[in-house]
Amino acid sequence: MDTKSFKEIKEQYPNEDDYLVLVDCEGRELETGEYEVLGAKYVQVYKTAKEMYDAYKDLSKKLPNVYFVPPQYKNSFIMEQRQSMRIGKH
Image 1 (cartoon, helix red, strand yellow):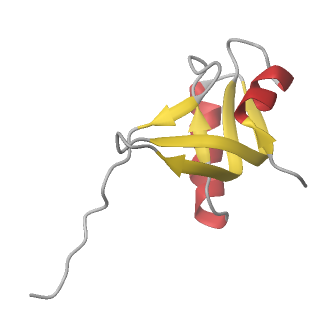
Image 2 (cartoon, helix red, strand yellow):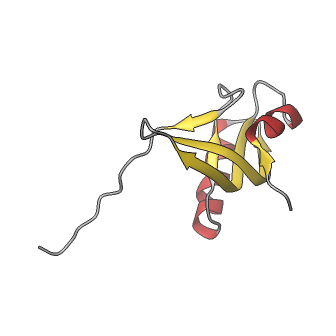
């Protein structure tokens, strides 16, 4: 399946109340340190935040690059990146 841009995804799912789960995403790191999701191969739509988050938790254990998108994102999806906590040897 081809990757759809975030704009195409929002055009396909225009309902302003929909929660989305994007699977197999492509993105890029911005100069600000934020991460922009450019598109995804698969999209699942949910009517409630709980449904979306439950699906996200399940899918993110099995598949790469899974993100959830609340309804307020319209034309682009940019998120803050958080550094994972790593314990290294000293």
